[in-house]
Length: 145
Image (cartoon, rainbow, N blue to C red):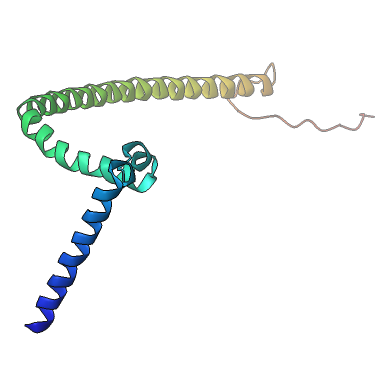
């Protein structure tokens, strides 16, 4: 108990001495709190910004909550409608693409058949009527004697 009383008395004596010194010297010698210098310090500035955000965000959320929910619902509705339209457009594009691929394959098949017929017709001899397809091989015959 003795130690705490002496510390308290020591603190009181120190405060009395400081107050007496400042009183005797006048207001010009008292330490001044310069707000401009404090705000130029990055640590003080960032701390003030953080505290301001910590105080203002809960207040803003409380007042804006009734407005945020309808806006969020509207945004989700727009997103879902857009996604559905995108699916429909993709399905329609897929059908158009499939039709186009089928037309090209049909055209290629027709072109192949026409090419085969043309090739068979050109390779068969002019007097060939026995229905052979393919090239007829002609060999040089020896002159008759």
